[in-house]
Image (cartoon, rainbow, N blue to C red; front, side, top):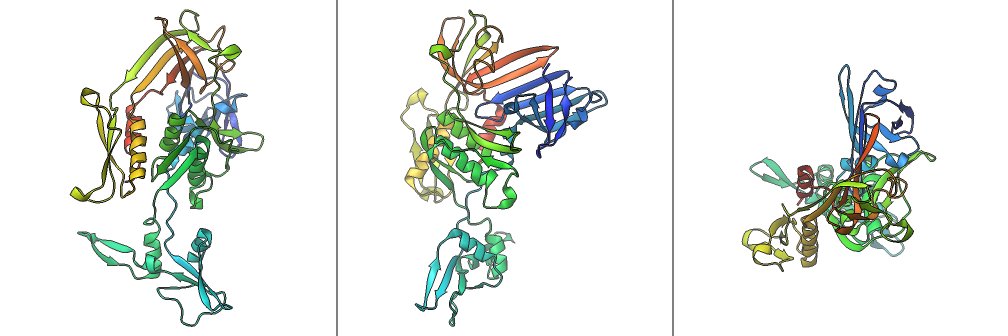
Length: 438
């Protein structure tokens, strides 16, 4: 039976759990996995299990899980959660603020106003009380004087609360408050997969524009620029869904792991090992006795081959593109996607391709793994690795270990793995279809 270490997010040890009734840990390469522990609450350190506690097997901090839910009775305590990277579930992808005002500095030597374009300087200027701000530049400027042109802020529209009626907000302070979340665009990034993962993690978890959104003690791992180069965009998309999409499209996973030495959390890319050839070969085979109940599942429910994407405009004047419309007849499966006010054809195509990628048919292999002999979990392969799986009909496939569930119960350990695409659940479908603001 595994001994579990329990600590809080400040790396303070809360105790050890050596006895329990059952333990199930699902690690996922691109998703956030799951954790389920059941024990008697009267056992030593059982009550240390609380929401936001970190739990991991002794000596294996890379298998860290975060407790989210607790159910407690007199004789039973059940703790449920996800992998530590489930912290990403607490954030959405908030795009950078479009600059709401223009900043000018008076050059006394040249007797001209010069525009300041540094975004940080503009945002800092908005918070200064001594700054001159208004809708027209001062007639009598002094050298070094800063003037914040509030024309755009002053044009913020108050839609009112009655039948959409309202008017222009002319009060500067009120305009600033109202404009705080009216100037968002899209957070777009094009580059390798690892850079994309780090981009959205840094912008929403590690060093966001709003300091209140930062996760304390979370740092970014060094960027090795691994993975495919693809364009991405997000606007209030669920962060975990965004990171999962990048991982599934590029084959590069992601994780948040505790650094016990430095006492910090580290977000980084997770690259599986190719174990399909040579001495590193890992073959899962029913005939070899290291796999059982190999099951292939092909899911076409909810899949699509053609996406109609709606951009800017309304009704018959709306900009609509068809993406991926090569299939015909019975092979054609269609979906509709709202892309908000986008009026760029290439961006609409990108949006449609991303939606089609998410709606592609899913091929999943599942198997009960027999953890003995060759190809043992943790020694010869891990989650994210590419392995060879052979079914009872002799069909071999090179697949990735997408998820692996480790179950400890009645003194025994059993393993269940999902290869290829992670199994689709109704909650995952709802998460993907309802994750973005349009």
